[in-house]
Image 1 (cartoon, rainbow, N blue to C red):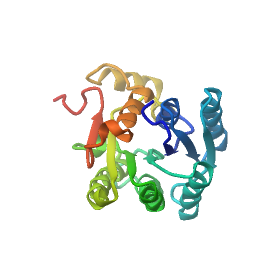
Image 2 (cartoon, rainbow, N blue to C red):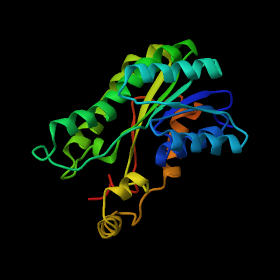
Image 3 (tube, rainbow, N blue to C red):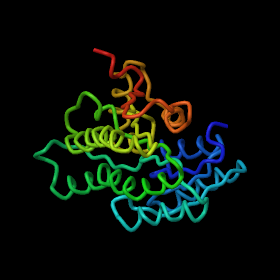
Length: 250
């Protein structure tokens, strides 16, 4: 087991990529704090992990709230006695260019997608130091790596921010033995992506992908497992595209 004896927090782990990461980590031996705003979804993830004989604890968490993010870390330390891994996956999505995006939506999206990474890391890094180091894996996006797309200005800005913050933290926390990397997923089959498009638009979107399909949450989770594990002990400050060839395709 690649994560045996380690304790991990995974935000936004009630559904989609977050749930896949939480269950994958648990199957590899980690004790997991499932942090999510949706109590029903979060508890379903916990039940799935516990049904496999692994340890999990749900903590209702708004990642844009400083008290919630600190409590999330405190629960990990109280329950498992340590913290080794933080995965910042929680996020929201909205469409619109700068003109059509309201100030309220801009502020909400940035406070969750980028501010949430900041607050979770601010709370977790002291605990990671106490454990002798560890790994932070941030979930950015293929539109937060080297290119953008029309009609998602706020989302794109937030994800480029996550990628930049990842690299800054990787530099800052090398002396703490804390590795910081991010994954830049391409379009992935989650409730979020299905809710943002009509069935016809989704089909056209899928057909336009180089690989001809959406990614699976489990494929993103496999990359997160590598970056969180000792197999990636020489990897920090990396933005890893997991996008079915999207970033390579002309």
